[in-house]
Structure formats: structure tokens, C-alpha cells
Image (cartoon, rainbow, N blue to C red; front, side, top):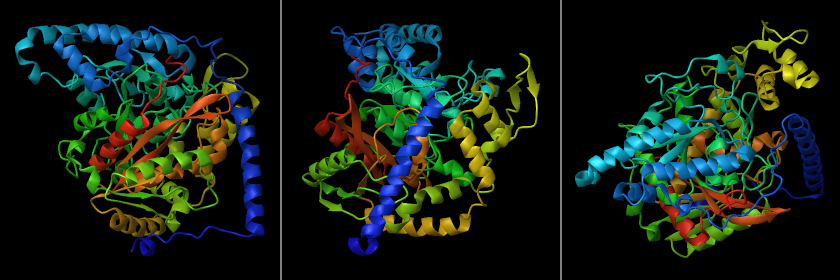
Length: 556
């Protein structure tokens, strides 16, 4: 039955096809080097002169959030002590990473003192305190936080007023009520629509395992600071892989919940179409798998479309496991053999403890996911990306140091970008996306909705209520800054599960030597809608077997 449902596209053979694939790979490599050279030339990575290891690393930096919460409530450590340790770590590594772009250390310490006072006054009733009282956290800058500007890396929004208490994102309010203390806001790609982490307002963020590489996006600041030990957990958002790609590239866990489970209120930009609103979801990035579910409980809406079950209730021996090693197409890149090996190792381990395990060929629709995702996210009723860029119709006058208003034009902006980077307020990927919107024909929404419906029915039948799917998070390791533009279709590996509204958990599977550095391995665990608990339970099992997060050179 599985073979009938999931027959997939046969692998192409023959001399002609091999030649075409070779030409494709050569063209992609050439574009990758070119884009890397162009887009990195004006904002190079902040390389330290040397990385000194430390033998006296504070043990608090290696504890899960749930353990930090217990230590603070028990009085073994104060919230002030814990917050100071993480602030010190951020101040040590952030000059190289540029991950935390809006620090709020003074406010965080004041809030930590208040948390300690509450704990001292409630020693007889600690069980009734907020679950994460006094524990530090970081927040992606696209979420409105009281007292801070909410720009999503758009230069013109730096002139806006700070968010009020009423404007604060609902997810941020929920985390505050749970006791979390916000250390700072983290960097994002411009308007959260690219899987590198770079904008003209805050600059470029580096990967903690190799500063010359990107940390993923758009929640790249979160991936970078969590992966380097500067934060134990962070809040990101995901419309096409923006939680899972940074989690994978930075060696941590990231969870995209079932569509509609968590509100997007207070984000900028916010989806305007109810359908796209379900594709986009906030969620946690964590160094430890056991933190995912407790934080998800806090974030989930009071009336979710599906109940959120506890992963502890999952009997792993009754789970059915499937593995697909690629999308089966030839437009996106082939999955790196080292990533294939890592996913296969995870699959073989699970096959020994789960009810059944089946390697499955990719569905035919997998090969065209980027087209499908682009059409469904770019449906006519959704606000266009270019609309937000046009709202920033302010450019620097080349003849005088004055700001002048002029009609926004993508062609004029590209001219400014190529002639003088300083005159354009936008990144090259943002301008290319706008150009794509201008040049592309109207999306075939009905056609792709029909394809998606058939794919969803087939996958629902395959997975059922007790199945999980192992699938690559991305076909390659984190690339060097600027190079991702040559492989924009690769985001289909994660974007697929946004439009399916399936829960997906990015899981680290160790490190692998890539040239002169060790980079994270990983894959994503996917389940049918409403089965978040299954993907989280499998993530926790894989953490025990493969070790989960591995400290980067910057952490050490």
C-alpha cells in the first residue's frame, strides 16, 4: 500500500540527463560564488583575531530552561545570577555574531530582581509561581516588544515609535506571564523573507560554528545566539522554514507547530490572508529537546484547532517511522551525502525501537514544492512583499546629505544597489524577491491548491495518527554569506510543511567536518496535523542517542 501511495518520480538515468545535471551543478556553483562575492563585499563577517577556549565556563550555560527554572525557584541560584551569566556570554560572543541587535540588559536585571523578590515572598507556595519565573530568553526582532521598535530589519521603520504595552505581541505576553525575562531582540532577514540573516538596518549575523557562513533565516539571530550559548531558548517564526533552517544550521532544536495553533498577533509583517496566517507560525528554538513542549504549552492558543498532547505519553515502540531522503527533482540541489548518512543513521536507530520503519520514495509533488509554496503564499489576497518595500520610499540623495522622497521603483533600487550600496536601504535578496513579484505571472492558486489537496490526502493516509516522517531540513550545510541566493528553491524542503500545516521539529544529529570547521548535521521530524507530540517525542529520543546540541568554538 505504501508503494502504491508513494510511488514517486523515478530517478532519471542516461547520458543526456547526466550531462544536464552536470551543467546545472556547474551553473549553480558559478552563481553561488558570484552572489557570495557581490553580497558579502560591503558587509564582511566580523572575524575575531583568535578563539581562546575557556576552562571555567559557567555550568549554568549548559542547563535546559526547565532545570534553570527549578534552580531559581529552589533558591540555589537567583534569577539575577542566571541573567548575569547569560548577559556576560552574549557580551563576549555577540561582537562577532551580531545576533542580539537590541539588548535590554538593564531592564532584564531589574525584572530579575523583581522575580527574586516574588520567590522570596512565596517560599511556602512555589508550585503556584509561573513555570519559568526568572529564566532568560531572547526574542526575534519582528515580534513587538513593549518599549522597543519593531522593524523586521526595514530601515524606514527605525524611525517609528517603540511598541506600546497594548501593541506587544501576544506570544511575547504569554512568555512574560510564564516568567521569562527578555535579554534582547535578535536579528532577522529583511522583512523575514529570506533564509540568510541580513538587513541594512542591523547588518549581517554569523554562524557560531563558522563566522564566514550564514546562520539561516529568517530567525537567524535566534539560531545564532541559542547555538552559541548566549540564550537557552528563543522565540522565532516560520513561514517557509524560518525556525527550522536556523535551528539546523546552528545545531539546535526548532519546532514549527501545526498550522493555526499559535497566534501571529504582534508580528511585522503579519499575514493578511487567513490561509497564509495558518502557514506562518511562531515557535521555540531550544538547545535542549525537553524544553520544546513546556514552551509550546505557553505559546499555544486557548482554543487551538487540535489539542496539544504531552510527548511523555507517547509510546515510542508503537510509532511507525518513514524516511524520504530527498525531493526527487532536479531543480533543487541533491542532498549532501553526509546529511543523507546522518538521516539514515537516525532512521536505522529508530527502526530498532519503533513499531515499523519504511524508506519511501519522494512523492511527485515534492519536486515542485517551491512553485507550489510561492503560488499559495503569494495568493492575490495576501499583501505583497513589494508593498512593504514601497512604503520605505526614502533614499539617500547622492548630491547632498539629505533625505528625499521619491517614487519607489524596483529598477531604480537595483540601480542604486549596483552603483552604490549606501544609497539603497535594501538587501540584494529583498530586491530580487521584489523583482520576481513584478516579473512573475499571476500565481495559479487553484491549480496548486488541487495538487496540495491530493498530496495532503496521500500523506495523511501514509502517516495516520501514529506515524512520523524523517526528511532533510535542507540539502546542504550552511553556505558562506551571500551564496544562498543560488539555491533559493532549496527552501522547498521546509516550506512544504508550512503549506501542509504539518508540525515539524528540526533535530541536530551531531557535527561533521566541512573544510576547516565542524558544522551541524540534522534532519526534520514531521507528523500529521495535530500530532506535535509525536515529533517532539522522537526529537527527545534522538537527543539521547545522538547527543543533541554540541558546543561551537565560540561557546567554548
